[in-house]
Image (cartoon, rainbow, N blue to C red; front, top):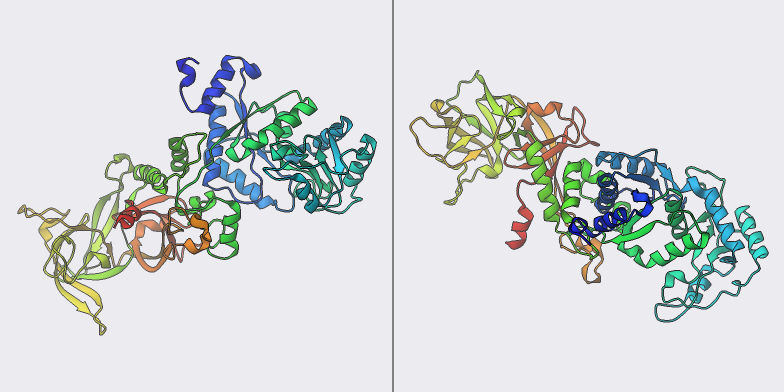
Length: 557
């Protein structure tokens, strides 16, 4: 293999070699085939990026095809969500395709297998089929119905199609080898009776093809050249190839498996995510703590951060667990470039500047981004009463606490140097207010006499700010691997994954904020307006990610 072909990950190398050998006439056609029985999560993003990017890199095409052959679990809302999410990630597709588009042809293929004596109608119960199937160490045994005549099988299969049997009475099975060491080749079921209305075909069908039968033939019918799927389908590849070879379809796609994504501090099993939703551990599939792409989008993740992350982790044959910190680092890198800066006080403490004129409101200029001149600047106001963070004051501060304390001087971002003169408390001893003075000669934060002030804190004008609710999201689970040691993963939930603050004070400029638009609240992190619960009267902001990996420091501490 020459140097040019060695570049890139192993799938890329395979495709390059195929093109070099003029396999498939040098064309590349891939597909992303989700089942519309739930919402996509970050693990799906890896497959989306891989399939669409391989098609793009080699001037090919990627189909979005819905594997909708299990009508009892599939819904239009999932179809709409998947289409929207793929578009949001930045990938374009032609008219979406559906496995249900091929139901007539799949039925004809099944009839063809029967005529070739390569499929039969089995009347064993589901329990008996499992019993006859054998184990990983013991071979299976033939069904007593395996030798039905071709005509009897054709008649029974037609009756199944016509709705003359109930669910579980009969199945159509491929006739392969009940002694095969690969359990997937032990006469797998390829059709079953299921009397459920389909979102697209309604009540036309009461039998539906199984995934292994549907998927390979849909690939073949669409002219897919490289069928990229995760490693759990590696043992299914012989069945994929057997079905296509048995039916002598004109196109034989090449199935190639890659390691699926696993990330620390979360779960990506759709079943487990569903449990989190149904047991109300989260507020829904779009809860910003979930790794669903709708949840991540609502939290403020950008498509660029997600696709950059997928590119960074690469593609391999070996399962591994990716550090959540890497995903958050990709997010910070992206938001640092694009997010304008604003000031917001999440836990407000009022400050009265006693020597500032009572009736004066001053306009100050603040940069929207320290490195991006093209983002311009904005006007903020300053007056006698401001809010600062409660955490930026300590009554008895330690030596390296460079923020407010009795007699201490700090810099107010974009404004002046102020000094704390008096601390006001309520009857319980809680600090409710600070009395400070300001130095009028330090506008902009610099002292003409050259004195050094180490601390700079953010603030908002108490008379010109907006009230808001802010949700501080953290990791949903306490441990790196929530499923370790056979522990119920629910026991691993982080009780501090959400903190809701209801009395926050934010810059007035955020009144015009749009959902998903990112902002850096200076010194606090990246935030966005919630797309679901926020209203003009009651704005709600979500913390997307902190400025630094505070979690890692906490774990080390």
